[in-house]
Image (tube, rainbow, N blue to C red; front, side, top):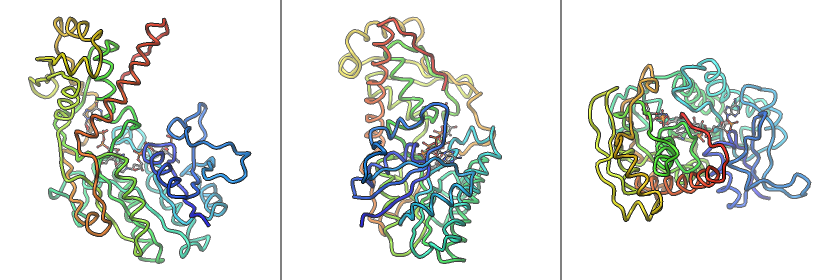
Length: 385
Ligand code: NAP
Ligand code: GDD
């Protein structure tokens, strides 16, 4: 019998990669998607199977983490061997705008799954993964952060995830559930949501190079993150659930980088050298040179001259807009993944340069398509991410 997995948040970045990974391993994957007025399954459409096929290994259910009866019914019907709780309102800045919704989905949503497992008497049958986060460390108590570093959440998102973390630990200790937390540091990919900083940069850079946009407005350029690739991180989720005993693990690369440096590296990848001047709201990132050969190889010869003439008039392609600042910021995240290295045998394959090249290559392709549409007379939208 094939193993069955149930994934909440299947339409998200991690849900999509994990689904692909588990199907390749021979799993039958069930996923919970939200009803929306427009289809929201872009990231998993390539895996879709006609519901009329008899033996499917990919099955979607309508549901929502705010609806306990729905969650309980789906778990009862699927009877999964493994549950990956990835569903969440996952944007830190947005959580300040929708704090109650975030607490309900990200915090109580986790409790709903744990309670369903308990009520359905499935604790000896099912293993559960909780998508915990390095945001829990917030105003960090030590650098680097390990499984033993105390938490100090700095946003409604992190507070909701703090509850989810501890309720997972509590159900493990109180009822003997095989429930584990993966404390994952930031991980990105070509299918990362467009309003997270990495994707905002790689999309914006591609649009600037192709003349679809003049500049990028950014928030805090000095914060530091430990960035990895989502393709590596979903493997850690799987490994955590294959352990005989449930436990909590930090998943990180062990390298931290400023947002400013992420920008500099991304632009350099297509041959544009950026220099940053000024401070805080007055800081700008300006083009000081272009490597013609790299630009032509990555973008095109046709766009090189146009780009150069545009930056002659205004070389400052990065400006700061304090509207993107957060009421309370997390200044530095740096994880120590030693426990995951040793116990799970997990090691990331991608470094930051590999991640950036994957994302920029993909966004350049996407934006070239937009440019063809523009040339063909279609209306191209502006993005303010
Ligand atoms: P994501 O791309 O934002 O995906 C979130 C998923 O949750 C989407 O499928 C979304 O559905 C779904 N969702 C949102 N609200 C829901 C609700 N009320 N009920 C059911 N589903 C809901 O996030 P991700 O980057 O893949 O991250 C996966 C998980 O890991 C999240 O819990 C996140 O907080 C956590 N995490 C992420 C990172 C990271 O760097 N990526 C690091 C640590 C922890 P729609 O598509 O309909 O919006
Ligand atoms: N989004 C965004 N947009 N962030 C910006 C910008 C901008 O224009 N400019 C600077 N930043 C800074 C943010 O202030 C933050 O310090 C950093 O870039 C990273 O922001 P995000 O990419 O939005 O990610 P995050 O670190 O807040 O949260 C992500 O990682 C967490 C794990 O640490 C999300 O994926 C969370 O769901 C996840 O738990």
